[in-house]
Amino acid sequence: MPLLITYFELERLKEFSQALEKVDELRTLVPVQVANIELEEEKIKLVLHVPADALRLTRESFPQAVVVA
Image 1 (cartoon, rainbow, N blue to C red):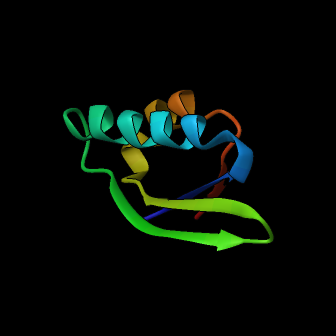
Image 2: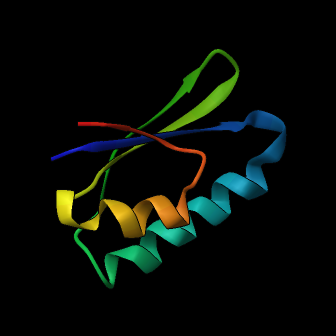
């Protein structure tokens, strides 16, 4: 299953909170899973497992994210 990785600045915790809400919304449509949340170089790293057939929809929700196949 591909991974979708996105980062959030620590000063912008509201954006991170909104991203988690997006994940919950996506879960009603596709089986997205939070693989990891960690602090990396003063940024919050959010890693999602995304089914290959749902990558497009997920990328629309997280346009700044990087996909690792």
